[in-house]
Length: 238
Image (cartoon, rainbow, N blue to C red; front, side, top):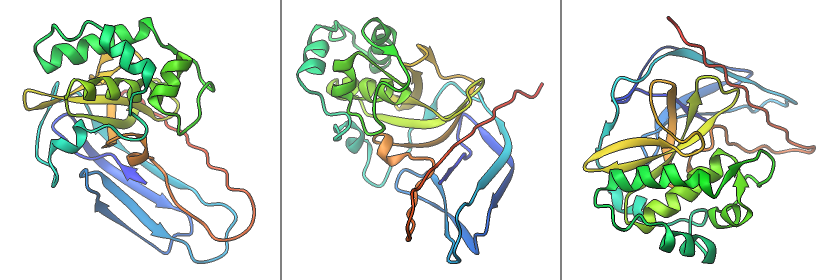
């Protein structure tokens, strides 16, 4: 699973990690410089829990300065299986009116501002691995779908953009938004709520799309059905 980390926007202190029955766990960086917690449980078990708590000071800056990945921002210009546009998204992009705007920031802001006109929030209407094209055709979805659609449109404009998973004040679960590379800086855009990312947001992980950013991922050997639940509590400290 991924852990919140220090960035130009936020600092994390008092981090506490508790993993039931885990003999050993380690923390390492992945290709996108996300902090990844991993380990294993070799003894038979039917349940296990991971509890993470800490203090985040967010909203330290309005952007994050670009630092090169091992493969550069070129990879974040490329569509993925989840963001690749089909007929509906290509037609929408053609008619969007974003082409007359010059800066990447203005284009990203325009895409975010206009997306609610054609797409609505509706939990349970899409699958966890839904593509941007399918969700856009349906016309409704959740934060993951908003982010994938915005990524698809930004990449059609050749703007490097990344999918972000984190937490937001007032939400009871994880949230997804987009960061676009504009003039050497990553700016956060939340198309679900039609707002710029501010001190209400805590970033946990980022990547090309949601498949790079699953907060919890793993495998098990044995019989039975696997069920996973997630609960997030974010409280403001005055």
